[in-house]
Image (cartoon, rainbow, N blue to C red):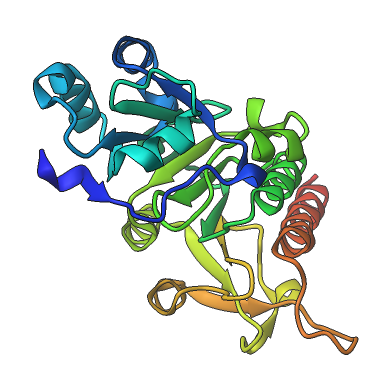
Amino acid sequence: MKRNIRREDKLQDRPHERLNVIYGVMPVLEVLRSNPGRVERLVIANGAAKHRLREIFDIAHNANIRIDTVDQGQLKRIAGPDSNHQGVLAISAAANYFDADTILEAVNADTLLLLLDGVEDPRNLGAILRTAECAGVDGVFIPERRAVGLTETVSKSAAGATEHIKIAKVPNLNNLIIDLKRQNVWVVGTSADAKIGHTDWDWARPTALVLGGEGKGLHRLVAENCDILVKIPMYGKIDSLNVSVAAGVVLFEARRQREEKLKAED
Protein backbone atom coordinates (compact mmCIF):
# COMPACT_ATOMS: atom_id res chain seq x y z
CA MET A 1 0.00 0.00 0.00
CA LYS A 2 2.94 2.33 0.45
CA ARG A 3 3.59 2.60 -3.25
CA ASN A 4 0.93 5.26 -3.83
CA ILE A 5 1.44 7.23 -0.61
CA ARG A 6 3.56 10.34 -1.05
CA ARG A 7 4.69 13.20 1.11
CA GLU A 8 3.81 16.48 -0.60
CA ASP A 9 5.18 19.27 1.61
CA LYS A 10 4.26 21.98 -0.85
CA LEU A 11 0.66 20.92 -1.38
CA GLN A 12 -1.69 23.86 -0.92
CA ASP A 13 -5.01 25.17 -2.08
CA ARG A 14 -3.90 27.57 -4.79
CA PRO A 15 -6.79 30.03 -5.33
CA HIS A 16 -6.31 30.16 -9.10
CA GLU A 17 -7.07 26.43 -9.32
CA ARG A 18 -10.23 26.45 -7.17
CA LEU A 19 -9.87 22.93 -5.79
CA ASN A 20 -13.01 20.89 -5.11
CA VAL A 21 -12.47 19.68 -1.56
CA ILE A 22 -14.43 16.98 0.29
CA TYR A 23 -13.37 16.41 3.89
CA GLY A 24 -14.21 14.07 6.75
CA VAL A 25 -14.05 10.28 6.90
CA MET A 26 -17.61 9.46 5.81
CA PRO A 27 -17.95 12.09 3.03
CA VAL A 28 -14.61 11.00 1.55
CA LEU A 29 -15.58 7.34 1.84
CA GLU A 30 -18.89 7.96 0.08
CA VAL A 31 -17.33 9.69 -2.91
CA LEU A 32 -14.75 6.91 -3.19
CA ARG A 33 -17.47 4.24 -3.09
CA SER A 34 -19.72 5.97 -5.61
CA ASN A 35 -17.28 7.56 -8.07
CA PRO A 36 -13.58 6.87 -7.41
CA GLY A 37 -12.65 7.99 -10.92
CA ARG A 38 -13.55 11.56 -10.03
CA VAL A 39 -11.08 11.75 -7.13
CA GLU A 40 -7.84 13.49 -8.12
CA ARG A 41 -6.00 12.68 -4.91
CA LEU A 42 -6.40 12.11 -1.19
CA VAL A 43 -4.68 14.16 1.49
CA ILE A 44 -4.04 12.53 4.85
CA ALA A 45 -2.76 14.25 8.00
CA ASN A 46 0.35 12.91 9.67
CA GLY A 47 -0.72 10.91 12.70
CA ALA A 48 -4.26 10.25 11.45
CA ALA A 49 -5.80 7.07 12.88
CA LYS A 50 -5.05 4.57 10.11
CA HIS A 51 -7.59 2.00 11.37
CA ARG A 52 -10.41 4.52 10.72
CA LEU A 53 -9.12 5.05 7.20
CA ARG A 54 -8.63 1.39 6.27
CA GLU A 55 -11.43 1.25 3.67
CA ILE A 56 -10.34 4.61 2.25
CA PHE A 57 -6.82 3.26 1.77
CA ASP A 58 -8.14 0.04 0.23
CA ILE A 59 -10.30 1.82 -2.36
CA ALA A 60 -7.54 4.31 -3.16
CA HIS A 61 -5.06 1.47 -3.63
CA ASN A 62 -7.37 -0.45 -5.98
CA ALA A 63 -8.23 2.68 -7.98
CA ASN A 64 -4.58 3.84 -8.09
CA ILE A 65 -5.48 7.17 -6.48
CA ARG A 66 -2.57 9.29 -5.31
CA ILE A 67 -2.29 9.86 -1.54
CA ASP A 68 -0.35 12.78 -0.08
CA THR A 69 0.57 13.10 3.59
CA VAL A 70 0.85 16.57 5.15
CA ASP A 71 0.92 18.07 8.63
CA GLN A 72 -2.29 18.97 10.45
CA GLY A 73 -1.89 22.70 9.84
CA GLN A 74 -1.50 22.28 6.11
CA LEU A 75 -4.54 20.01 5.92
CA LYS A 76 -6.61 22.58 7.81
CA ARG A 77 -5.54 25.34 5.42
CA ILE A 78 -6.78 23.26 2.49
CA ALA A 79 -10.06 22.16 4.11
CA GLY A 80 -10.81 25.51 5.73
CA PRO A 81 -10.30 26.83 9.27
CA ASP A 82 -13.71 25.68 10.54
CA SER A 83 -13.73 22.25 8.92
CA ASN A 84 -14.03 18.99 10.84
CA HIS A 85 -11.68 17.22 8.45
CA GLN A 86 -10.94 14.23 10.73
CA GLY A 87 -7.50 13.93 9.21
CA VAL A 88 -8.57 13.22 5.63
CA LEU A 89 -9.82 15.04 2.58
CA ALA A 90 -10.36 14.26 -1.10
CA ILE A 91 -9.70 16.65 -3.95
CA SER A 92 -12.14 15.84 -6.71
CA ALA A 93 -12.14 16.71 -10.39
CA ALA A 94 -14.70 19.10 -11.82
CA ALA A 95 -15.51 16.52 -14.51
CA ASN A 96 -15.22 12.76 -14.94
CA TYR A 97 -12.09 11.13 -16.31
CA PHE A 98 -12.31 8.30 -18.82
CA ASP A 99 -10.40 5.08 -18.49
CA ALA A 100 -7.30 5.29 -20.72
CA ASP A 101 -7.78 1.72 -21.98
CA THR A 102 -11.30 2.57 -23.14
CA ILE A 103 -9.92 5.31 -25.39
CA LEU A 104 -7.12 3.07 -26.66
CA GLU A 105 -9.53 0.26 -27.50
CA ALA A 106 -11.37 2.60 -29.88
CA VAL A 107 -8.26 3.48 -31.93
CA ASN A 108 -8.84 3.15 -35.68
CA ALA A 109 -7.58 4.49 -39.01
CA ASP A 110 -9.18 7.90 -38.35
CA THR A 111 -7.97 8.36 -34.79
CA LEU A 112 -6.74 11.79 -33.70
CA LEU A 113 -5.48 11.96 -30.11
CA LEU A 114 -3.82 14.65 -28.00
CA LEU A 115 -1.13 14.05 -25.36
CA LEU A 116 -0.19 16.90 -23.02
CA ASP A 117 3.28 16.74 -21.50
CA GLY A 118 3.01 18.76 -18.29
CA VAL A 119 0.57 21.63 -18.89
CA GLU A 120 0.34 23.32 -15.48
CA ASP A 121 -1.81 26.41 -16.05
CA PRO A 122 -5.52 25.59 -15.58
CA ARG A 123 -6.68 28.25 -18.04
CA ASN A 124 -4.33 26.90 -20.68
CA LEU A 125 -5.62 23.38 -20.14
CA GLY A 126 -9.20 24.58 -20.35
CA ALA A 127 -8.51 26.43 -23.61
CA ILE A 128 -6.74 23.36 -25.04
CA LEU A 129 -9.65 21.09 -24.16
CA ARG A 130 -12.12 23.48 -25.79
CA THR A 131 -9.97 23.58 -28.94
CA ALA A 132 -9.56 19.79 -28.95
CA GLU A 133 -13.31 19.25 -28.66
CA CYS A 134 -13.99 21.70 -31.49
CA ALA A 135 -11.39 19.90 -33.63
CA GLY A 136 -13.04 16.53 -33.05
CA VAL A 137 -10.18 14.98 -31.08
CA ASP A 138 -10.98 11.42 -29.98
CA GLY A 139 -9.25 11.61 -26.62
CA VAL A 140 -6.89 13.69 -24.50
CA PHE A 141 -4.27 12.20 -22.17
CA ILE A 142 -2.68 14.10 -19.29
CA PRO A 143 -0.03 12.84 -16.87
CA GLU A 144 -0.87 12.17 -13.23
CA ARG A 145 2.16 14.12 -11.98
CA ARG A 146 3.41 17.65 -12.55
CA ALA A 147 0.35 18.72 -14.49
CA VAL A 148 -2.94 20.39 -13.69
CA GLY A 149 -6.03 18.18 -13.49
CA LEU A 150 -9.69 18.90 -14.11
CA THR A 151 -10.15 21.70 -11.60
CA GLU A 152 -13.10 24.07 -11.55
CA THR A 153 -10.99 26.72 -13.30
CA VAL A 154 -10.13 24.25 -16.07
CA SER A 155 -13.79 23.30 -16.46
CA LYS A 156 -14.89 26.94 -16.71
CA SER A 157 -12.12 27.82 -19.17
CA ALA A 158 -13.11 24.85 -21.33
CA ALA A 159 -16.61 26.35 -21.67
CA GLY A 160 -18.41 23.01 -21.51
CA ALA A 161 -15.87 20.95 -23.47
CA THR A 162 -15.07 18.73 -20.46
CA GLU A 163 -18.58 17.29 -20.70
CA HIS A 164 -18.06 16.12 -24.28
CA ILE A 165 -14.43 15.16 -24.79
CA LYS A 166 -12.77 12.04 -23.40
CA ILE A 167 -9.98 12.92 -20.97
CA ALA A 168 -7.79 10.31 -19.27
CA LYS A 169 -4.95 10.50 -16.78
CA VAL A 170 -1.95 8.21 -17.22
CA PRO A 171 0.98 7.55 -14.88
CA ASN A 172 3.58 7.66 -17.65
CA LEU A 173 3.33 9.32 -21.07
CA ASN A 174 6.28 7.34 -22.43
CA ASN A 175 4.54 4.04 -21.74
CA LEU A 176 1.43 5.43 -23.43
CA ILE A 177 3.47 6.39 -26.49
CA ILE A 178 4.82 2.85 -26.72
CA ASP A 179 1.27 1.47 -26.55
CA LEU A 180 0.11 3.86 -29.28
CA LYS A 181 2.95 2.82 -31.58
CA ARG A 182 1.97 -0.81 -31.11
CA GLN A 183 -1.47 0.16 -32.41
CA ASN A 184 0.09 1.82 -35.47
CA VAL A 185 -0.68 5.34 -34.30
CA TRP A 186 1.88 7.94 -35.40
CA VAL A 187 3.12 9.97 -32.43
CA VAL A 188 4.01 13.53 -33.47
CA GLY A 189 5.59 16.01 -31.08
CA THR A 190 6.10 19.74 -31.47
CA SER A 191 9.46 21.46 -31.11
CA ALA A 192 10.94 24.76 -32.24
CA ASP A 193 14.04 22.82 -33.28
CA ALA A 194 12.19 20.40 -35.57
CA LYS A 195 13.24 20.13 -39.23
CA ILE A 196 9.75 19.79 -40.67
CA GLY A 197 6.89 22.27 -40.57
CA HIS A 198 3.51 21.19 -39.18
CA THR A 199 1.81 21.64 -42.57
CA ASP A 200 4.30 19.28 -44.23
CA TRP A 201 3.29 16.29 -42.13
CA ASP A 202 0.55 13.90 -43.29
CA TRP A 203 -2.09 14.24 -40.56
CA ALA A 204 -4.57 12.03 -42.40
CA ARG A 205 -3.00 8.98 -40.75
CA PRO A 206 -3.96 7.78 -37.26
CA THR A 207 -2.05 10.29 -35.16
CA ALA A 208 -1.37 11.38 -31.60
CA LEU A 209 -0.19 14.97 -31.24
CA VAL A 210 2.09 15.64 -28.25
CA LEU A 211 2.34 19.17 -26.84
CA GLY A 212 4.76 20.27 -24.13
CA GLY A 213 4.13 22.41 -21.07
CA GLU A 214 4.36 26.16 -20.77
CA GLY A 215 7.87 27.46 -21.41
CA LYS A 216 9.47 24.02 -21.11
CA GLY A 217 8.30 22.17 -24.17
CA LEU A 218 8.51 18.41 -24.33
CA HIS A 219 10.53 16.46 -21.80
CA ARG A 220 13.63 14.96 -23.39
CA LEU A 221 12.52 11.33 -23.23
CA VAL A 222 9.03 12.15 -24.50
CA ALA A 223 10.55 14.00 -27.46
CA GLU A 224 12.90 11.10 -28.19
CA ASN A 225 10.02 8.61 -28.14
CA CYS A 226 7.96 10.54 -30.68
CA ASP A 227 8.04 9.23 -34.25
CA ILE A 228 8.73 12.73 -35.54
CA LEU A 229 8.88 16.33 -34.35
CA VAL A 230 7.27 19.21 -36.24
CA LYS A 231 7.38 22.96 -35.76
CA ILE A 232 5.02 25.86 -36.29
CA PRO A 233 6.95 28.52 -38.25
CA MET A 234 7.30 31.86 -36.46
CA TYR A 235 7.40 35.11 -38.46
CA GLY A 236 7.61 37.72 -35.72
CA LYS A 237 10.16 38.50 -33.04
CA ILE A 238 8.66 36.17 -30.42
CA ASP A 239 9.80 32.60 -31.00
CA SER A 240 6.87 30.57 -29.67
CA LEU A 241 3.11 30.44 -29.26
CA ASN A 242 1.08 29.85 -26.13
CA VAL A 243 0.46 26.09 -25.89
CA SER A 244 -3.30 26.51 -26.25
CA VAL A 245 -2.82 28.52 -29.46
CA ALA A 246 -0.33 25.95 -30.77
CA ALA A 247 -2.92 23.24 -30.13
CA GLY A 248 -5.43 25.09 -32.29
CA VAL A 249 -2.96 25.70 -35.12
CA VAL A 250 -1.87 22.06 -35.39
CA LEU A 251 -5.20 20.34 -34.67
CA PHE A 252 -7.08 22.35 -37.25
CA GLU A 253 -4.35 21.72 -39.81
CA ALA A 254 -4.85 18.02 -39.10
CA ARG A 255 -8.59 18.44 -39.53
CA ARG A 256 -8.12 20.43 -42.77
CA GLN A 257 -5.94 17.70 -44.28
CA ARG A 258 -8.44 15.02 -43.30
CA GLU A 259 -11.30 16.93 -44.89
CA GLU A 260 -9.27 17.40 -48.07
CA LYS A 261 -8.56 13.68 -48.20
CA LEU A 262 -12.26 12.85 -47.85
CA LYS A 263 -13.13 15.25 -50.68
CA ALA A 264 -10.46 13.68 -52.90
CA GLU A 265 -11.86 10.22 -52.26
CA ASP A 266 -15.44 11.18 -53.19
